[in-house]
Image 1 (tube, rainbow, N blue to C red):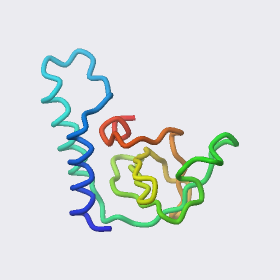
Image 2: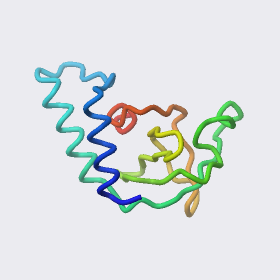
Image 3: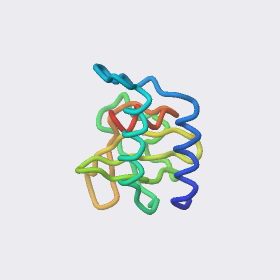
Length: 116
């Protein structure tokens, strides 16, 4: 998967809309665009990663121990992962060399996942 493919996925997600709240924003669309620009500036070359469960209830998650998960963005200590099979995004934290744990949610809403 290339950065261009990731950009296309992000744009497709944006076209669907977002459920992410922008409390107090005078111009919600401008804030969404600002979030997307910030995400795009944090894109990395997609790299395969392993996601481990942080707690028992996550063991059946679409991301846990699946071979099709890639890290696509990094901002501060947080990462955005993408499952090529499930076509979902999830926010994650690095717990090892190429090992991650996720917040617990995954959706096709890239803005909501990136913002947490």
